[in-house]
Structures are given as structure tokens and as C-alpha cells.
Image (tube, rainbow, N blue to C red; front, side):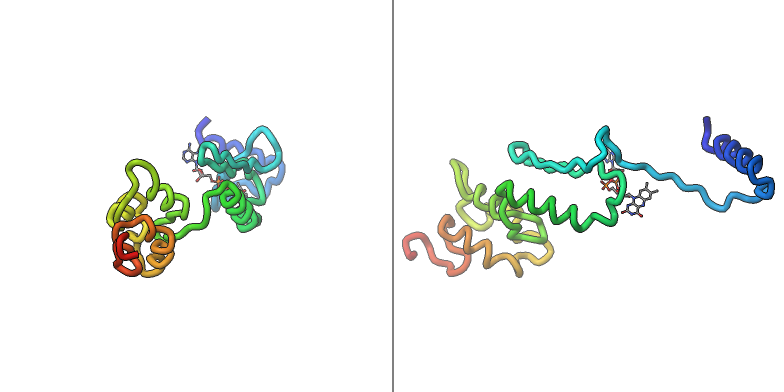
Length: 154
Ligand SMILES: Cc1cc2nc3c(=O)[nH]c(=O)nc-3n(C[C@H](O)[C@H](O)[C@H](O)COP(=O)(O)OP(=O)(O)OC[C@H]3O[C@@H](n4cnc5c(N)ncnc54)[C@H](O)[C@@H]3O)c2cc1C
């Protein structure tokens, strides 16, 4: 059934119950989808092994509860060991930076670290995060970001 014929049916039903509605123009039409699941409660869970947090089934009160849900999801995120966000412009976490500095293909200079993680590549171009990045990365870099010193000089 098309939306228009459904609307005509609704208008006809309304006019049957309240004859004064007959001939009145419909001023607005709304549609709302509730993101429901088969359970009543919110479906919020964390799967750290898949780097995945679900926040679904928030069929009602989701706007009112949005800040509380956000805080809860952030707590889940932190508890999953992702660590704090170091570069806020590019949403790069401490863990991502640490991971980029380890392993067989570890970043050895700040250019490599930037390309791998995008830390310091955002809007502020490192103005806010370079000190924090240096604190994490400098001992791994051939040339320290904070002092410009090499491994031998340190
Ligand atoms: C008419 C109405 C009135 C409401 N009034 C209130 C109120 O006054 N106060 C209140 O607290 N709550 C109210 N709610 C409930 C509130 O809107 C929801 O709880 C809240 O929007 C849920 O947020 P969400 O992000 O989980 O889901 P949604 O806001 O539904 O967001 C889900 C998003 O995912 C997208 N999406 C879906 N499937 C896919 C896909 N396969 N691929 C990509 N994207 C996809 C959708 O397009 C949508 O943008 C109302 C809901 C309705 C319908």
C-alpha cells in the first residue's frame, strides 16, 4: 500500500470517528523508526578481541540517555585496554602509537610514526599532542622528537 493511500485511509477513519475532521487538510506527516531488537533492554556490549563495541537496541529514551550511554561506552572502551586518546584531532590512542613502535616493522622516526598512525597529522598539526607523542615514542625513535638527540647521545 502506498503512503498516500494509507494516509487517505487514516483520514477516512479519523473522519468517521470525529466528523469535524472531514475535509481538514493534513498539515504534517511523520515517520519514526525505533532501533529495536528482540530484547527490551539496550544491547550494549564490548568484544575487545574483535575491537568492537555495540550500542544498539536503544529503542526509546536514547536521546535522554545519550550522555550516560556515551560515558558507559567510554568506560567499556577504556577497560578494554585501548588506553587514552593521545591525538584528539585524528583519534589516535596510546595503544596505536605503542603498537606502531613495536615489532619487525616498527616506525623508527617521527615521519614513519605519523604515516602509520596519523598522530600529529590532524587539524592542530601536533600543537596539542606532540609532547604526549614524544613522551611515548622518543625512546624508540632514532632522533628524539623532544630534544633532537640520537640514540647515542641519550
Ligand atoms: C518518534 C520518536 C520519538 C522519540 N522521542 C524520544 C524522546 O523524546 N526522548 C528520547 O530520549 N528518545 C526518544 N526517542 C528514541 C530515540 O530516538 C532513540 O532511542 C535513539 O535515536 C537511538 O539512537 P541510536 O543511535 O541507537 O539509533 P538511531 O538513532 O536509530 O541511529 C541508527 C543509525 O544507523 C543507521 N543505520 C541503520 N542500519 C544501517 C546500515 N545497515 N548501515 C548503515 N547505517 C545504518 C540509521 O540510518 C541511523 O542513522 C524517540 C524515537 C522515535 C522514533
